[in-house]
Image (tube, rainbow, N blue to C red; front, top):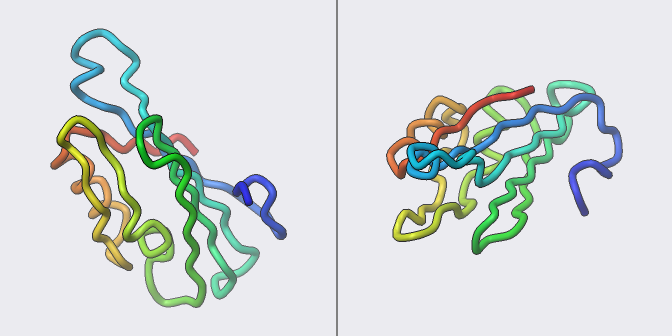
Length: 114
């Protein structure tokens, strides 16, 4: 099920993923996005979908409960990358700054747009 059709959608967050090598060569560089559907309350379920223009298609995740970073938990273990820069996100409950660092290590920039 696509994130846009999740029940109880209250608010969303969105990041774009930019390939820094493509950007240097004059292309837009946008190769993916991460969407979050936030719950009505802190203990509800946060849904996440990561889209990549390459091999992995759409990957979905979710996290519930409270007292930890649900965004990074929901996308933990998702795969990303191409051309020898493939990686698996290892970021469970450590926050989006850790996610940004992991993308940067592989030549990508993670930019929050919403």
